[in-house]
Length: 327
Image 1 (spheres, rainbow, N blue to C red):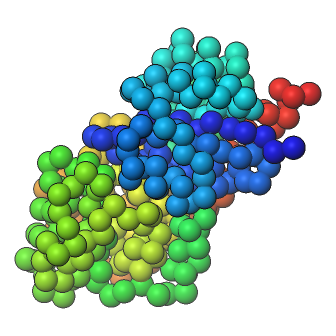
Image 2: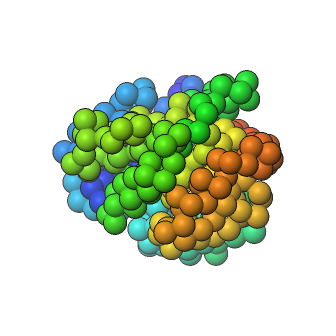
């Protein structure tokens, strides 16, 4: 009999896509033994489509993310596992959820928890076990990476990268407009560079707004193809930076928000990324574009750090939890 899991990521307007992307990667890895339903805000057609287009069942609910979780369980209590990804789920809510089904919490900030399994999927997270977790998996070996990114890794290993093409992504929200400023700085300073700039779902920009030698990816379903062909990734040190390491795309990154600082440092320590202040992103990228030997070494180190099998490892642990609770 197929088990059912509720996957709840903190997502919605004004929130990045990193938490949701990790849950979609996990939902993919749970198949076919576990059928995953993914929670989205009621009325958010773009996020609902993002879930359904990948073959998963979206569940709409009103309110903020914790309220949506409580509402979904009340409406359909027959879940064999619950997975939370975000920083907004307090210990009291986790305790109530854990009484209903085995609970997994994905969190890279080491917040207090009450769960059966805590997962820190960030490079450098190996020793960051939070208080209150019965079991723990941490580090790059558990990075939640989609199968399409792993396929891009295989494509990139054949040497199919475009010459002097930069993928710029500074987060789905990017309220400061960092992505636009970095892209235009690159185009102004080097006439041989082409830029693919990622634009989030809340942006008012359209593909026709691009500059010469600039292509816009507006709310793409994923960045696997872009990472597989780009010479360098430039942007935020979040989920995309980990995907870039897996694919073997050298990165120039910055901590766009404070919770990315530890991951940025870990990627730099592993030798697959250069970490700079936001104002230095374009200059550091141009330096790296002119250093093929360093890029090759960074690519090798990134692929060694993130092997792309993290979602399968976490999914196996969740299936074990479900089996143990049912026994």
